[in-house]
Image (cartoon, rainbow, N blue to C red; front, side):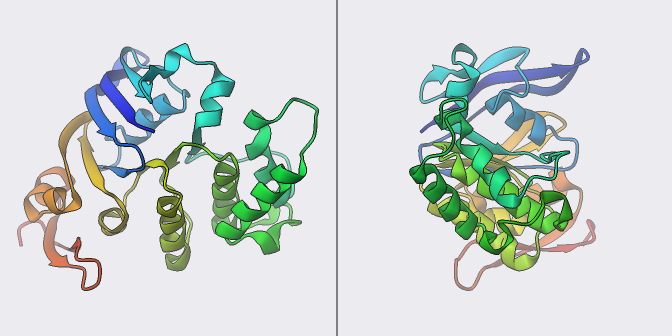
Length: 256
């Protein structure tokens, strides 16, 4: 399912946070949004799952302006793992994951066997099956993050939005979560801070800086010493991953 941002501008309290951004993610692509803190990555993603509305421009999913689609219908197509996703109630991990099925089920009907099977598969993918009966609030930050990832997977979206999905995760689960997302074969748009992880998992990268799109392309085109120095304000030596063949950054002082 193709996702297109057309000249999207987002304002908060009259201040432009994102300005005239145009980008596209092809059906089945894993696209990374990268850039320094405050560049507008999360703001851009919020427009896709309709937590924010553009002041100008539009977001298209499969050729349809999402502003013309009901929230429930949009939730059937687009699932999001947000930075601030949490719950004030101590539901079990399994109950949290089950809420991912709500866009697909009738209110008060309860879960079907098929829904339970989908949730179980999502928990297995996120490596949280052993946490099913644990209270969400008793979990560590990394465990909570994996529960929320499982909830997004249980939604069975055609577009998956990931806003800093590796926050709180150890190295093993950083890789496994992104690999699992890529293996779904659906369109994934992720805001990522780790440029090396982004290069290993993304088909295309888009660099935001102060709300504007300043660079885009394949990892080989974007992960360069010039781009790193100019837009991330740090030096970098580029090496090639010995197995994947993608660029990787060894960070250094900017004047090196």
